[in-house]
Amino acid sequence: MTDSLALMGVKGGPAIRPGSQMPVSMLLRMDGKNIVVDCGLGVTRGICDQGVALTQIDMIVITHLHSDHYLELGPLFHTAWTAGLNRTIPVIGPKGLDDYWHAFQESMRFDIDLRIRDEGRCDFDSLAAISVIGDSHDFGGITMRAMRNVHPPIVDTFALRFDGQHSSVTLSGDTAYMPEMAEFARGSDLLVHEAMLRDGVEALCARMTNGDERLRTHILRSHTDAEDVGRIAKDAGVKQLALNHMVPDGDPDFTDQNWTDAVRKHWDGPFFLGKDGLQITL
Image (cartoon, rainbow, N blue to C red; front, top):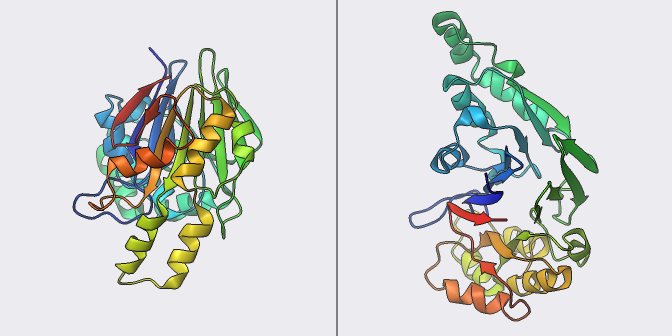
């Protein structure tokens, strides 16, 4: 199987609206393994749409504890369980992810216990083996390295790099512009980087009905201008660049051309503007 990275959800932020894409989730297929990175709303459907059975997931990684990155982790496991999952899957994430997992179990306790009793299902609680992200992890010959990025006010938030036998991919996670990302991604076959259009952020915040100036402040200090993403890709010498976690999303005043023009100020290599379901060969 050829190594690939599927962008199953590319929208920045947790809200969805008519015409929007889905929050962030990715499926990395490397060295015959299926690795899910982030579990925003829609991840379960996204995996199936990539032709991968939920019982074939080998590892899950959560980059940080904003809801658009882990909201559907519990439902993904529950749905996989009802689809036949009967083995433990390693889940690597920030401190506190185990609290979410235990609380999800308790929120679904009636259904879980009923299905075990009434349908003969296996134990549910042991399906996820949660551990805290470290600097480096080895998974069946695939090396995953983590670098703390800049996404205030959250501290435990990470960029990831996966190096396998034949390919490498770097995922920025949610982050403000950091020149160090270029060295972290150096020579990767693919860099997937979050991005914002500053004018689009202003338009988004102007329409907000249940937030205030703090939302604008958060977005602008915690995310990366698309122009700077192109600069990072150039400095890193990566082979391909893709955007995800895009802000704004679904605004007709900001088209694909706006994103492309911003990135192309510094990057002239192969470029993929993130779309839900897009699969990129590594």
